[in-house]
Length: 165
Image (cartoon, rainbow, N blue to C red; front, top):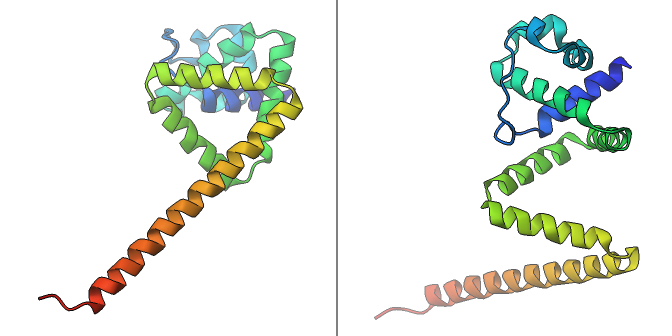
């Protein structure tokens, strides 16, 4: 059970954004609810030395965990296990993508969420087809960029060879 508590606390500390929920969070361990303390047991001995922002994230994460039903908890645990299985470079890349996403205007974030939900409702075959189309378009884009770069390089070489005057 300790691994689950640590897992949940770590997952939620990474994923939660304080701007989403504005709760008064205790600076003192004893001011946390017993349920929050139970979820955050792994942090009890270090609580007072943690930065306030980390305490807030952990407390909010514990509160969120406590409001989840069993299905949502299983889903969160699955996400955490997948996260743990990623290479450090992959985790860093995902963190950067998430930061970029959070910097987008709220309307654009919502459009992306809606598109993802729509994609997830599609059949596996349709998802596969769309992925293939996307990958093909990405390859073509890269090829066009490479061609433009080669053309610019050739133009520069020609300009160096041609005397000005």
